[in-house]
Length: 438
Ligand SMILES: C[S@@+](CC[C@H](N)C(=O)[O-])C[C@H]1O[C@@H](n2cnc3c(N)ncnc32)[C@H](O)[C@@H]1O
Image (cartoon, rainbow, N blue to C red; front, side, top):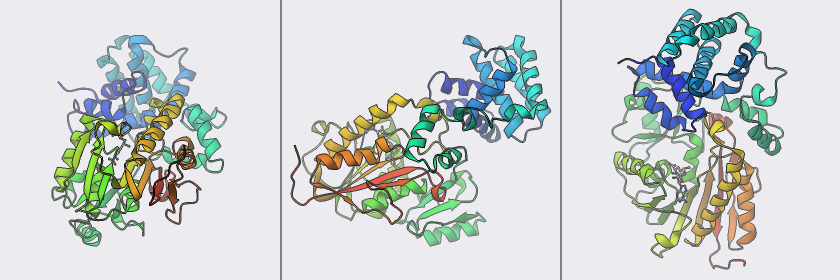
């Protein structure tokens, strides 16, 4: 049976916003019911769009309806958002957007609401002023939850608006060229031969290639030969900063799905890598990625904060801690994060991060390097963690990061900087002899 794309999109948005599923879980399920690649792409665009503009879509509806639809009619409320999003932001002809949305209402058992939905959408079409939010509260004006706007205003008084703006834009497709298989310049030449437009804008990351337009990566040169991986440039700094040498013992303590583990091995194929993650399901993707790229690691499902349960007693020369975090730096790629994440999550995450950091520090050999990383822009998960850790560990020394790093306790990349995701890095060196403060 063929499904109405707008009905699928409405249900998907309902699953995320009301039921708390992530878009990465809900969208593939919806897309599996779509007939073809075009419909899958349309579905994605609508769901991403509703996540990006939810407060404004709600505000427009509240101007046109006495109250929102509730209980079993909630998916139809999201269908209204899908309809309004199409009219305002997509290049679908208005008449098609409206009639398809009304048809979708029937599929969502909303026969009795087709007149209401038609009426709301026709009003949106006729009244562009409904989208004037210049005097609206910040949460509506900027399409982010108020608590997150407040956090960003405090942390970045000069550029919080630029961060919110970057979060509203589509992220580009970055490739990481597998230097153990092909030189980035040769890969760039292969792209040129294939007529694919790209740039290599980062002098300190020569293996990072940005495509001018996103495309199905399986159609790019060398996909099945493991010539590249898809990875945002900000994340590509991890393995570079870790600076692993062949023969060293390396721990990637929060490794799944394995992007950075694979990069470490591409740069140091003879390194002895232990790739650990708490989530056995996510580790399946680590195995897949290692296999596709022809790399080898010891993969362990365990808790990085409880090394007694898995550590064999031999210290590591390098440790990467890409800790679980708010993901507030990658909202442009995962627009649902702003609705799924709650203010209270931040303190809980910060505690977990500090525990992982403290426990794994003991596993680092004297003279070794630990790289702490998050895809967060919140200081509680970043600079404040490192400041707190350094206060308690006299054997830890912060090593200087690239010249761009201006913060005292690490390097904070903001979303949109050089068209990259928001990321944080702090590189800690362990003194050659161990002495930990009480
Ligand atoms: C930011 S992701 C890691 C991304 C990965 N480094 C990459 O580049 O592909 C964080 C990971 O930490 C894992 N994790 C969360 N708590 C953990 C813990 N206590 N011990 C080990 N892994 C944990 C999650 O399952 C998740 O896969």
